[in-house]
Length: 118
Ligand SMILES: [Zn+2]
Image 1: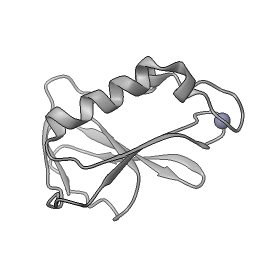
Image 2: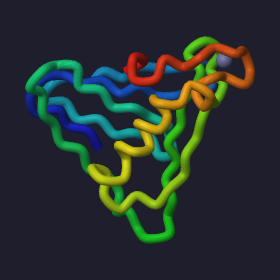
Image 3: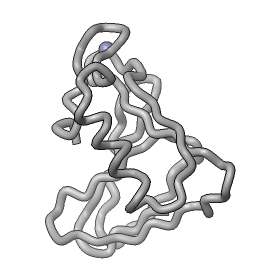
């Protein structure tokens, strides 16, 4: 569940047809369909929101995926046990951003721009 309380936000949803953007305005509430790859974005400086997620139980792994911006093919995937998003996630993202070889699409050869794609 996503609830922006100051500023708008949007969630990029990965679909078979490519990225679909779901806008959620300040004060609105939106429920993410289960098992939908997504990337929440808060472009407004100073924005704030409430996100309620399921309990991360031990043994339940989560996937982090990046898709080709050119052909929508899965470029890279990391699966891990997330215990603390503040501690566990930055290294996963930094590893993807730092290594151009894992950002290259096996399907079309395009290189994912990494952090610049956000
Ligand atoms: Zn591609």
